[in-house]
Image (cartoon, rainbow over all chains, first blue to last red; front, side, top):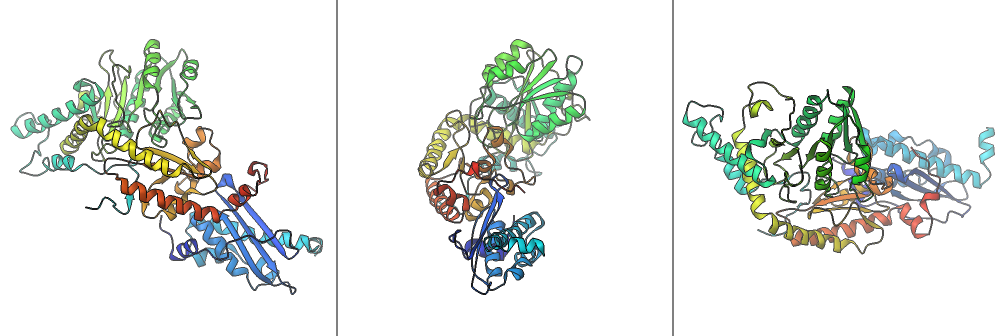
Amino acid sequence: MAYSDKVIDHYENPRNVGKMDANDENVGTGMVGAPACGDVMRLQIKVDDNGVIEDAKFKTYGCGSAIASSSLVTEMVKGKTLDEAAAIKNMEIVEELALPPVKIHCSVLAEDAIAAAIADLREKRGEAKAESAA
Amino acid sequence: MSSLNIPVYLDYSATTPVDERVAKAMADCLTLQGNFGNPASRSHVFGWKAEDAVTEARNNVAKLIGANPKEIVWTSGATESDNLAIKGAAHFNARKGKHIITVKTEHKAVLDTCRQLEREGFEVTYLDPEDNGLLDINKLAAAIREDTTLVSVMHVNNEIGVIQDVSAIGALTRSKGIVFHVDAAQSPGKVAIDVDAMNIDLLSLCAHKAYGPKGIGALYVRRKPRIRIEAQIHGGGHERGMRSGTLATHQIVGMGEAFRIAHEEMVEENARVEALRDRLYNGLKDMEEVYVNGDLEQRIPGNLNISFNFVEGESLMMSLKDIAVSSGSACTSDSLEPSYVLRALGRNDELAHSSLRFTLGRFTTEEEVDFTVAEVRKAVEKLRDLSPLWDMFKDGVDLDTVQWAAH
């Protein structure tokens, strides 16, 4: 299987690997996937007082494309508001990393991870209800 | 020549390089100056010479498995041999019964052939192996029915290298008058075969896992008591009508030479390969959360199938770009399912996804093993640093209690 140069770059030099305090009020954690399926992503985002994502960290168990997708996502979300981050679509990841069709599920998982992290943060901040009411 | 050849080849169970001696013997059977004749040509010396070469090869193959040369049928490889044996015996005995028994960890050449027979109205029982990969003979005995005509059990498993007790199975099937087929594609040169002592009726072989060429194999078909099979390929009546088609002298000579060498050098080679395999295992076994898949004792010398928990197999192979190995990870297969062999052992999906198969062979060196140990340790450490599962494991979270969102 041939990997694109971008996948290899993210795989060999993953960006923003790590873990943040999940109890921090400004940190949202999203964990998606399942070990039995061969991939689990944990994405964490931290927002500043203006609701802008100032930091993001990930850890991923999965194939090279899953690791690269989550690494890329940490770069993409930084500096974005939650609404902007929520608008990221998996096809942007597919295009950026030149993922082959069998690896598209990795990008879907990464999109799910963003959504899960944002939902966690909004719930913590009591925005979940506001969202569903809107 | 340096004894560290990069990339390091540790996938000998997938295929082996052809031994130089084999390549030389094959090359002598191709050109005008060589032994190019059709072994079926009875009217001139070109045919006679080719027939002599085929006879010598037939003798060498027969000798390695304790058979009579007349019991060897040339085929294109183990897949064809499995098809011929299983379909051939099932069809021939269809009036007697339509029940076949095999094991879930068999090669796809056996399993898919059985599936085809199911579509034709046969009934197949797929037995579960024990956790160590070995078949419990009592479970086989219990599965035998009045209408069972064929039992097919592989000798050496291609993924985990475990050796089934075919002698015990053969004793049972012979006493019941059931035909016993053994897929022995992985056995030659690694574990002794004696078709008489083991009461084997049909045995599939191929050359390319034993330093011979791809595209050639054989099926052993017992003469006493006579085992009848229906031919699957017709035209010309070669190989006593069981497999028609012009014999490929160079391929057959290659297989014969490979099996001659296997017979002569097997004991010495296995001792050397086993020492290398143990060196590899000893270099890895002190790591946390590593599990050997399959029985370590009842196993061919060159196989180490091992799971590195919390690390996914395909990404591990991506890190090991200078080492050629296989993985049971779903991501390396077309089906997106993890290894069915490891799952049949009762390994959970996580460990199946996390497995690597190292298979060592004739040209593996100590330096290559040491290089591999260092690379694997480095890669596993790196990927565990990236793994949320490893984090959770280290934090004492029981992963089985976590509610995962399966996708």
